[in-house]
Image 1: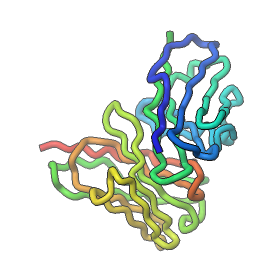
Image 2: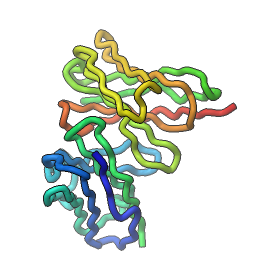
Image 3: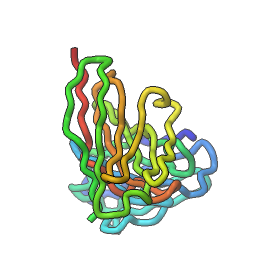
Length: 106
Length: 116
């Protein structure tokens, strides 16, 4: 299963609404996860099963799905949100990741 | 508290074998999967393989099949990744509660530097 993530990078201001998309090459029945990775750190789970918020993750993060298209939305971007974001399908093995989206300060 | 603690950084010459460990605590180690993920410098995440320590059921990505060996010793709550040094990369272990679950807890990563 191939995961196509876009954009590869984006620049945004603090307070902006940011949207990242991920498209699966086949039906993955909503088994789509989103991770945040900061430089020098391990990835952190944000969203699982397309739209479920992991415990402790701020509510400004949300996920949605439409068929094989998935979206991560960050409402009101905060300084600590500047990082790289990855989608990952866990429907089948291998659990392929998207290429990543680097969110930078504008 | 769930924790995954990985072994320390390694420096290896190309072709040399190494074995990275990942010790879990704070949960039932035998009843969750442990996966391994590679990240080369400045690159994305690559799913390598996964093991269920309870019965050692192991699955590999075709990209890594034959290049790495994943194992586990449930008596000491530890999973292993064995590979031959070829590319500098960080290797992460991560817990997956079920086959279609996400990686919810991650180790701190092990940097393997390959240099001749």
